[in-house]
Length: 496
Ligand code: FAD
Image (cartoon, rainbow, N blue to C red; front, side, top):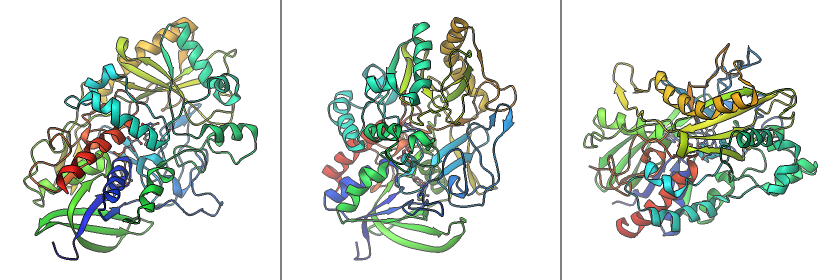
């Protein structure tokens, strides 16, 4: 390789990308990270880096002129509004059968997610990553991921007393009365900070309803965990507002074409670098789209036929229940969920008791369920439209609705309550149009070997959620992080 060849280029700065960059840099490798989203390190005109969930603005959405909020309606009224087109933080990416929500910016999905940091129960690990040694994962890599991410558990005594989790206590009571097992869910929120928010001694974040468009305080996104460690190595450069468009083989590595974007999404410059090794960490959708396009358009024709396949939605489905007047869920709701109903073994659903942080009493209980579903979609190159399509069908969500109904039909019948019909449209009970948890598209042991090395191209790796075949049984980012820690350790030991 000549002097201009960089040793390692990482596409994307989410969980997989940050793990790869940190461990490579610690092993003495210089790394260049390329991120299509913004840096999210500069306050806007309101003095805050991130917009509030209740008042979305240009910072909130990736290159849209109108918001596309996951809950599109409230009390029957549509709540979306026009915003200026901008490289905002949350991408509501529309495919024909599903809208896939993703984070955009340095930190990827960690910027926008709910911070629920769940390790799947060991008995279910065979459903998640068949073929990966569970002992290694549960003895070494899950603990490593949990420690690096700063995962912690709510103080149960505080949970029982604080106003901001009344909604979750109502959810727990109803689960218990119908004999469903409920669990506290670990998170990456700083619990001491949230207690101070409740006491009124610090600026509010979780208790101001911040979540979907970023948390200004309190949440330990990758900006507070892996990324400072990455910067401290002195070996990593990060280029925000740069999008990888092509990767093709050249002598000594791969030529990577990178488009620089302005904040309205126009390409303002096109650059090329040569890298000895390239790590795809653009997320399940981003990595799959790149690989499918590069295979179909002749840049990487030797990628195998598994590329683009095995994509799933983690069985996501949402619903709300209307409580009686004597079961108020509280006007103040922490935006960080911390309670789950674990009915995976009996009914194929793990439901998180989610907030509806509107600032007013809604008498609603709201749930995001993760369910068992057999459906897997494939990405394909659409040459006529010059884009990548996804073969998901909305009707496939029926399996997920059926699984979630095993919980909520029973609770409704026990409590004498009904479903809300005003949150996703008019008279629509199920939020079946979206996922927050895209997984797969470059599945481990199929598109890649058992450590993420892409078949057909030595020096190309997948290190993100694209490796996972469609479900993690619970929320995914701890598993994505742990798998990346496992794979990069092997790659550093054997490929450098
Ligand atoms: P990502 O984190 O998606 O990172 C990929 C990065 O690559 C992005 O920053 C993207 O902008 C960048 N990129 C893409 N294409 C390119 C390109 N061509 N060039 C350059 N850069 C590119 N998970 C949980 O475990 N718990 C939760 O509570 C939770 N809540 C969620 C709530 C929401 C609203 C959303 C959207 C997600 C949530 N998730 C949650 C899911 C979790 O955030 C994702 O599973 C996780 O971020 C995926 O990690 P990743 O490393 O695979 O990719």
